[in-house]
Each structure stands twice: as C-alpha cells, then as structure tokens.
Length: 364
Picture 1 (cartoon, one colour):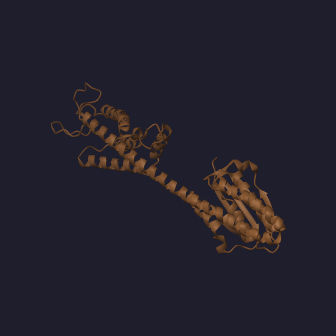
Picture 2 (cartoon, rainbow, N blue to C red):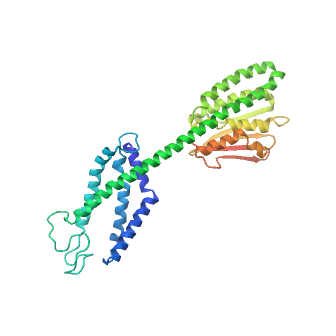
Picture 3 (spheres, rainbow, N blue to C red):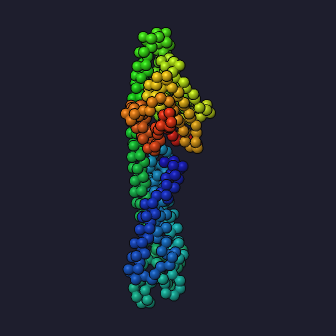
C-alpha cells in the first residue's frame, strides 16, 4: 500500500468494533487475573491502561507490514520485517518507559507483598536502586512485548490483505455479471426497434428507409455506450434521443413528449443503459397501447449526492407481468450488483400517469 492507503486502513481499524471489543476483553482478563492473584485493587487509570495498550497495538502494529510503497496490499516478508522491527521496538520502548516511570512509590510498593515475602510481578521492588531509565526486570516484559507486537502486526496485516483481495474478487465478479446483463440489453433494444419497423415497411417505405439509418446510429451508440461501466449522462441522453427518433417514425403524432433535463447535468457519470429501458417500457406498455397515443415526460434533476430520474407516461396502467419485463428485470439486477438500495427503482401509478422513478448515487 501507499502511505495514503495505509493511513486510511489504520483509520478504519480504529472504527472497527472488534478492535475495541478485543481490547476490552483483554482488559477484563488482565484486571480479573490481578484480583485473583491477590494484588491490591487498581485505580481507574490502571483499569483502563491494559485495554488502551492493546487497542494501540491492534491499530498500529500492522502499519509497517502494509506499507509496501506500491499498490500491493502488503509488503514483502523481508521488507515488512525490516520496517516492523524498529517500529514495534519504538512502541515497546515507550511502554517500558511508561511502566518504569510509574513504578511503586517509596515504602511498600503497590502490588508487592509484605516485607520478607516473595516478589511477584515484573515491576521493580521498592528500594531497589535504579541506575538505568528502565529497570532490568522490565526488559523481560519488553522482549515479550516486542515479539508479540511483530507477530500480531503480521497476522492482522495478512488478514486485512486477504479481506481486500476477497473484496476485489467480489467486485470483479459483480462487474463481470453487470457487463453480461448490459450485453443482454443491446439485442433487447434492437429487437424492439426492429419489431416496430416491420409496421413501417408495409405502411410507409420512405419512413422505413429513414428508420434504418437511425437504427444503424442506435446500434453504433449501443456498442460504444454499452461496453462501459460508467459513462457521462450526455451519452445516455444521445441514446434516448436515437431510440425516440425511431419511435417517432412509428408512432407519429400519437407520441407527445416533453423533457426536463438540464444540460449542466450531462457531465455526471452513471452506469450505462439506465434511462433508455425506462423510456422503452413507457412507450411499449403505455403510449403505444393507447388508442390516441399518449404523453411521455422525461425528468432528470440532482438532489444532493443523488441523481433523480423520472420517466412518466399516460396510457393504460401496466400489469405486474409488464412491470417485470426483461428490460426492467435486467435493470433491477444491475442496480443490485452496483450496491443500490432495493427501492432505488420505483414504479407507481399517479392519477392517469405511470411513473418510473430511479435514484442513482453520483459523485459530489
């Protein structure tokens, strides 16, 4: 990982409940063991220090193992060890200095037995001379602390590496499935367009010739647009316009449309083929089935970090089967793969209008 990614991973560890859960459990075991061994009851600060100490190591110990300087999720073994040794040693030295400075006061040491009794623990006995900043008896604890920190850092870093790789594999699988679903949309759109052209071939050959030209443009746009995972909203607008140009030749004056789509939003990127299926569904199951045709309204607006899309049409209300056609079913599956909430796409009836409302997350 690079420095920015390492800092982000470190920050994420401070927000994980399991980090603080493990620290709290260690503190309970530590203080419970002290009481069972007959040590005096610790003060509030002494109760908290073991948990804070473990939390500190759970957060900071993996850091040198993860700092690889490139996009790799973990440094090579020798590189991580060389980086971790001075890092954990510095943390250990800080802990030893803290313990040495907080030794028992003169007289009877806290946590020590009566005079003449056996010594317990690794803290220096009261009355022992201190010629070094850190008492020699504490170095035993320091060696154990250093070994534990090195091993813990490697285990946690390796676990997070496995989690990152698993998440990347899931994203790759979801993207592959999304591409397959997008690929299904291309022939579906063309099939519906060609089905509509069969009527024109018999009734208006000249209009059918113009429609074939538009159909070739639509095919080109589908090939360019449908192969991307995200594309500018302007590409989606062009795709919808090409599709509607075909439908205008077929429906003529029966199709009355209006747009509320600010051009300023066209720079936003969304997954491809999100609006076209809604327009297609509105024409196929609403406007085209009405005797006198109907109205189509396309509305796009931004609401904070969401893009709100509403495609409304007059005409008969769609049945449940029509609402679960290939286009909308494909769209729902792609939204689920992209992590959108279950209610991102909503179909409802409002008076004489059928509304398809879609909400997509966009970058701020």
